Each structure stands twice: as C-alpha cells, then as structure tokens.
Image (tube, rainbow, N blue to C red; front, side, top):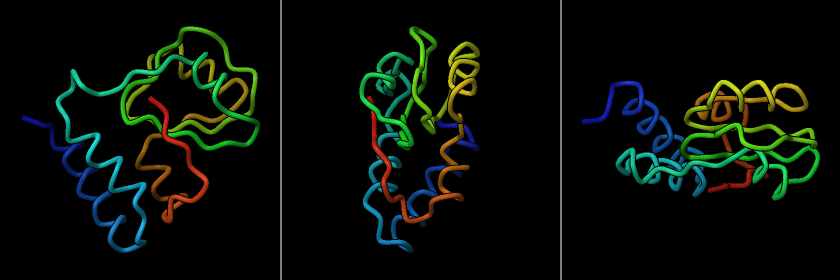
Length: 114
C-alpha cells in the first residue's frame, strides 16, 4: 500500500500532465506507481557524468551519495540520502519532485535519470 504523500504526489503529477499537456509528468507518475523495490536509485557521480552546468535533472527514485558533483545542477528526486543532499546543495540545488512541479509546471528542459 502506498503512503498518502506518495499517492497525492502521483495525483498532482497526473493532473499537471493533463493540464500542461506534458508527457514528462505522466512518465514520472507512472514510475512512482511502481513498487518501491523497482524504483531507481542514482548516485551523485552518475548525475555529474550525464549532466552539464545549468541542467535540471529528475530522478523518480532515490539519489545516493556515492561520488561528487562538480557542476551546478538542479536535481529533483523522490528522496535523497543525507550525503547526497549535502553534496548536491554544495554546488547545485536539491528539490523534491513536488517543488520542481511547482517551479516548472510545463516540465521543460528536464532530463530524467535512472
């Protein structure tokens, strides 16, 4: 059974996908509907390798703290480990998926990782 916060996030993403005609939010919602064990986990070094300065990256799972981040990147994820949050906030910005949804409702120029 999914918790209420996750369920509300999925509903908000689906509403935004319809309202903004954004396939990104529909895809993220379907990824979050999967069982927890099937959700993605991405290390900080993977984000650093596959992004450029100024990119917006979304991870429909957990970001782990392995490696370091050398670029100024905005990372939105379902959850972060404490070390990942610290490393990302040193050079970039860590957000929840809900915060990114509010800041970028059309979901433009966002890269999905994981």
